[in-house]
Length: 428
Image (cartoon, rainbow, N blue to C red; front, side):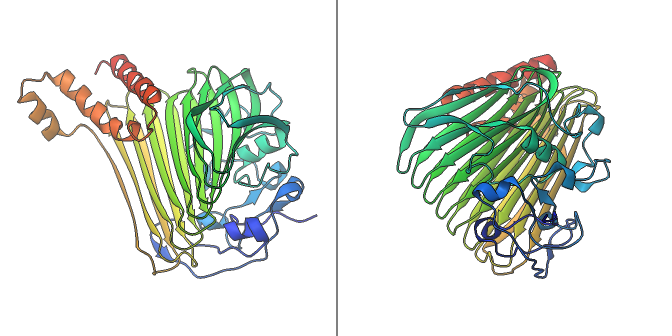
């Protein structure tokens, strides 16, 4: 039996079994040497019985050097000392990391735009696994436990009007698994909204395949009831000249952990990743991103913004960008900003940038966490606006930069209303 290896696979490895490149330290902007290792083909039936990685090296030494596997047994039991889990309160995972997830899967209802096909398939369907591999123990547990997957397909050349909404409703407090596969075929265009609600303890794998020339927007809303726990691994594979926009909105739940990744598979790809989160007292919202520039001449932009209020409100943002040796001409930038509205809230923000070639267009990152800008408040109050109204205006403007990127009017209005409710709950 093939053993699990250390390292996230490159896109070429997923497609053709070629070696990946391991990076190096995750502690800042550094150059890394090439470090190849043997690979394995990952597609169709091959994914059902193998575990894989790409490259060799020390676990956690680089975002490129992480263990990937379809088997839960290949991932050690979590201790909280792992880089990927050091911010996560493991005791609040409610069993999602322990093993088989035997709870009733969440109910999935799809309102599809005309022309978008919807299927429920067995987890052994050849498409499952073609866009991603579990990168942590919780994702692997969901992979092994899921019996079915929901598959959305946008036909080649088809321009869908309106959005397709996938409503995922929790089925109770027993740990459960879910799997969604979104496939945008060449030169198609569509918007897909994943709307998570109700009460659930769910580990979810979302795969997104964006083929050549396609334009796809995926919006993932976590608006759970306050007692819910949700871990969602959302992996996207981006083809030649394709454009992918990914938006994460975290509003409700006890613990929500979303780990989006985008891997370029062809030149000319363009990725935008946005995030908005508003954490109240006791909530833990965690976002860990990975952008893998594995081929030349691709562009990525990451913008995440969050607001926190209340005692023990905690948010985590970790942004990993890897520019591999082959990825000449890369243009990338990531930013995270957090606004602390009250005492007792905490925001952890860690941008990481690994560069294996100097032949790039540009690469950078930024992170800022703070309270209200006194100058902004003074400016508004000097013009006769009361302090409480001025504070609300600042928060609205701060978060609206992300909301307006969704480009779905009804959804934008819903999110603005949600922000208003959060502000009212915090007496701001």
